[in-house]
Length: 432
Ligand code: UDX
Image 1 (tube, rainbow, N blue to C red):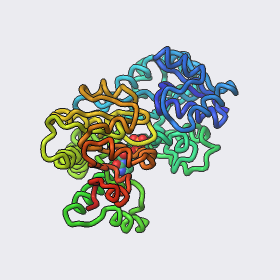
Image 2: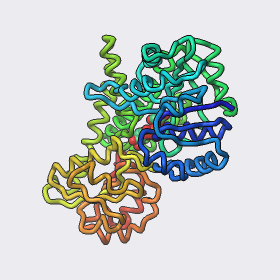
Image 3: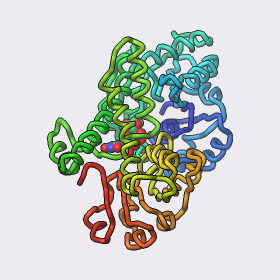
């Protein structure tokens, strides 16, 4: 059992803390928001994440997991300190490391001899060295304290499952004995452990996310072509996916990728490329295809309501950036809602998890708490997030509620044949 501090109780920090406690370590998780720490200490999970409430309850019950306000208290008694603070996108596209830098300065004076500081949040290549340097400047001798990169590959909604059953664990550290100590934290997991130099570990994270974003933009481009040549993208991706070099995963066309990782990480990798004088034209294209895909959905909606959005009422199902999360960060649905409103439409939305915070994110958007009520009098229903429950709603009721039975299914979630049989005009992505 190791003594672990996790700094930051967001999606990554909470998952890391609860899962490491589940694996038998003693974990103190720190956050700066008092109310969050209070709620977590009472077993209340502030985010929607499958399996997290059970693991939090378990950690609190066994006494292996506790929460404190402030990083110092947690770091002072830890052998391993995971940095899980946000690394948001700065105006120039780079990753803003100010939270990482502040926390590193704060904990430096209290770190134990032999402690390992572990960069878990996604940080640009060079961040392991940067944290080492700040620790040194702030009074922690690098002979006594070591730094490693250990990027997360967690998908929101399935982060607990991803943490406990990872495809791989990556540890970037120049000192093999430190890498072994970090790897022992994961001893109970059945996963390949890859030890690399820090820069390679940091690049693995960016390259993985950029590659997945590339797959999505690629399939979105193919879907758009399918529409032009009367092919069905679902058949096409099925035929592609059987080739094991391609695989079935991440080949679902849609309104474009979003969320807290892909947009930010692709921007940061492009920024880093420019910085070293490399023209990463492929990744530029991926980002541009994604931007256009959001716009394309707005164009489809516009043409389905007769060519003008002015004064038209549009109903949306789904606001989160994907299903099974309550996260609205960089959600394509919000971009699309915003554009529809800018075009003059009255836009109302239903989402099973997003709540009314979406109204603050998109001025003019009205959030409704019922999937049928949202359709009342609308000229179009647009499905923007692939919540499974949308498939099982009563479409006779939906048709009767809508002013015109138009459905734009940007996730190819619904059955076009069944809908057309009920009298709907249906349009998906990449299928005629
Ligand atoms: C992603 C990575 O998967 C994870 O490894 C990394 O650590 C963080 O970023 P996440 O942002 O939670 O995880 O979502 P993910 O499931 O990867 O989806 C990202 C976006 O791509 C969503 O907007 C989703 O709707 C979209 N997507 C995904 C598609 O449009 N098509 C697909 O086939 C897959």
